[in-house]
Amino acid sequence: MKNGYKFSRTLTFAWRGIKFCIRNERNMRFHLIAGTLAVAVGFLQSISLQEWAILSLTITLVLVLEMINTAIENVVDMFTTDYHPLAEVAKNVAAGAVLVAALNALVVGAVIFLK
Image 1 (cartoon, rainbow, N blue to C red):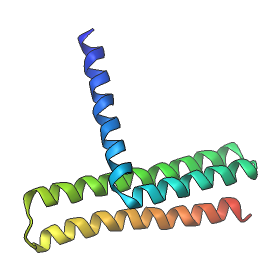
Image 2: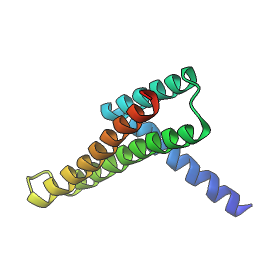
Image 3: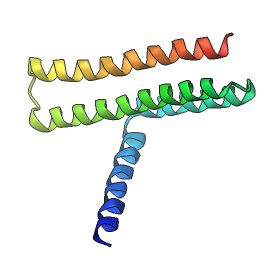
């Protein structure tokens, strides 16, 4: 029973993190809307199972990287309010990872939807 309790607690903490990102991160909301629109277009175009898998992984990658970016930004902000070049690098690299995934999502969307 104790392990079940621990698992449910970890799910609660994870859900709190997701809600935090949705409530506090404008880009997370943008990516969620874009992902939802992509899913709607996928239904309208009756895409294949393989295309659904690729689309799902692509949307998930962008959302996960946005959450990691948020975590990195918050940890950096927790440790310094002053400018530090390494803090800038950490934030910029994390944001760059989201940008790379978002650009990839555009390419994947174009390949799937503009056949």
